[in-house]
Image (cartoon, rainbow over all chains, first blue to last red; front, side, top):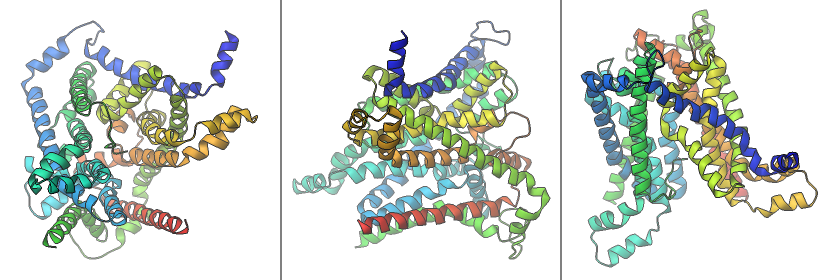
Length: 266
Length: 264
């Protein structure tokens, strides 16, 4: 036993042990706690009342659906605006495009809340009303770098002779894009969607600041409940969000065939 | 040609849009008005009061907290994550899969879930939340990125060099220090920088783990401020300084990379 232990301790495998212990305590156990809290009440008894409360609570459901809608629209606009940018970036000379990519990522170094407040000032400046439009616009602002970078990465690695080949074989530019470029860059688009959709769906604070507390997203609902010591209900709402995240992740890995073809941001 | 001009215009227009909020902050850091967007003449007053005024001590304190938390969390994350990556690389595929899965949970989960889950952990353990819990929370969401930064470097490395070092009489620790670390250093550095960025910018996880002992980081300070109805004016010069520092740092790094490449 002792010898076995020494053998284990001297092998490189054991070096992952500290992190494994840390991750179990701070990642796995807390997630289980969310589940435990979601299915119990204040007294610690097993119950489904937290979920019943959610499904009966029209306002919470509306906020939930509204948040998904906002996240989908934000993601869509990020693709529509970000894809051309990534394409142009991947077409320019390597040195120049690298500098430009850095320029696109640089704003992320300014604190996200300060950036959001400055966006509000900008909207006031050009007198854009602070409603849903401003909210989506502000979200696109904050998250578009996360869309551009992974798409740029996959386009960068794409073999350009495919485009010439398709054109030589008689495809018009439209077909070249739809049948060659787009499918090949799909892994990048997929990880872009993950990097934009997930944060927008879980975001809070940003929406309040952008609309001066006029519009509430689901993240804010969760936070309010936790702040008001309704931990069990808050945990149930978190679990619902967690399920949504899991569904998106599964959808994404299935589409990617489990291979991460170099699209990841990091 | 027309196409190219169109493409370039699009790119610069997008950049202009992206940078306009930051430009607004920088421009309005040189005026003394309380409200952002209200120009009352050029002045360096805000810069002065940021450093001199005792009222702004809480802002400076929040800044110091933010930076020290980020440094602590990133250092621990880098050590923990690098060791984990080395161990992970040496494992059988079943265990590797399990640990990789656990590692990807915080990346996918979104800040708010990490924040709430850790909040529930600390609450059920009866731990008073404060500086240490924030650092622990930041380590939790930074380490996975370090692992992801270091793993590719290990894959590129020649595995025999480690065995060779052991055969030639090095202890595992010596082999780690002299063979593996030099190989994975670039990955460790980018993991560290990434952790710093994530930690400094974090709001959602911090707000759930910071407790109510009066501790503030820059993010929670700004949030509380905004809820009270407006940004402390001194945040404008502070943001400007931070942004310019990062800009200068990036330019220096860029130039160094270029000059190293030229030497080669």
